[in-house]
Amino acid sequence: MRSRRSYAGHTQRRRKQRRSGPDFGRLYREKKNSRLPGVLLVLLLSVAIGVGTYMLADYNLSKKEKKEGMAETTPTVTKAPEATLTPEVTAPPLQQEGERYPDGFMSDFVDTRVWTNARGIYVNTASLGRGNYSTLDELIELVDATELNAMVIDIKDDTGNILFDSENPLVNEIRAEVVYISDLPEFVAKLKAHNIYCIARIVAFKDQVVTQKRPEMAVKNQNGTVFVDADGERWINPYSQEAWDYLVGIAKEAVAAGFDEINFDYLRTSSSSALASADFGDIPEGMTRMDAITEFVKYACQELKPMGAFVSGDVFATIINSTADGERIGQSYVGLSRYLDYICPMAYPSHYNFGYGGLSYPDKKPFQLMLMEMNASVKKLSVIAKGEHCAKVRPWLQDFTASYLGTGRYIEYGPQEVRAQISAVYSAGYGEWLLWNAGMFYTKDALLRDKDY
Image (cartoon, rainbow, N blue to C red; front, side, top):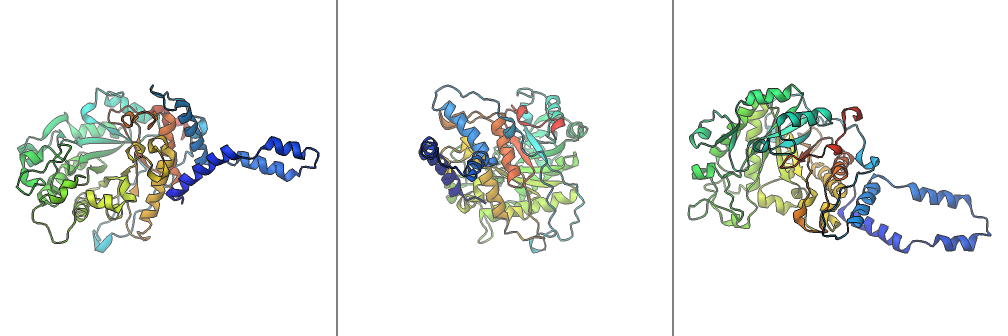
């Protein structure tokens, strides 16, 4: 596995070779009367064609960057060469379910669930009717026509609204419903008719609704007021059993309606440094935020897996390499993977600091960034012994253009950039991925068609 430093070194060596490579014309002039060994010709040809997948992707993307330069105008997407758009078609086989969980957890659980290699898209339930794929029928057509086979569908959104007609007593008491899906079982059945793997997205601990209506469930300040971070967000207390029951109760309704999987997003605390002085109430001595989030996941798995549902969680991809990031937001990559069925690192190239891993602008190197993070994931999870449960890794990929990064710091994301990320996932040995675009403007040309897989 390449280290971060090797990526930068590799690029620097290639650039140095381009600037100070041998003068082949001079060599020819000096040697034209000699008997040039045939082996030299073979060697030169070998160097010319000995470019692997990594170098091909790097060359294509670098060539595009040079063409765009630092121009003030919006970059233009060019159609990627076939070699970039079509990586190996066959995804790696499903990983086998682990034999046991830590400390005898769920030792009596017999797993009869059918595992699926999911390749999916995010569905912004509240925006159906306003995106590129404006209706559910159009999204279904996209899945039917391509390699896609899954949808991640909002049922509890980023504000804390419940987007279906819920029978949960607390949901009804605090009037958290904003009903975009009037009949949840019917909604799921429509997708199932097209063999779509259905994932219910539940935003867990970021919640503006329940923290306002039931402040006792919220993270608080030392003076008893509800904690509000710099972004104006309020957060559910991850140590609260009542909060756990609330979230799992919503998830159980989704499972009963036919969803195959529950995906917990915002499975963390606020990233604000001010959280260090917040009041989480009476908590067990020595129990960290990381411990609290992991304990919630254990509870959710214990309640939902026996119902036949899979359980997944979204995490910051930076926690793969940064223990400090994980401790700050309460996410342990290895700890969560010991219980979740799927762990979903959000490895969007646009979300990394400039210079990360030796990449000046990570957004401009989607293949390299994704391969670096997925290889790091493989290494990180290798500490989980064979025979022990380990979550399958299913990363979120970027299918949007991060123009907010500023001119020269991003590229337009189209078929080449999206496919490069998918190719990197496969290159690392993983076989599943999800595409994120909040407005559902998905790049169809990045996806393989029925005839291609």
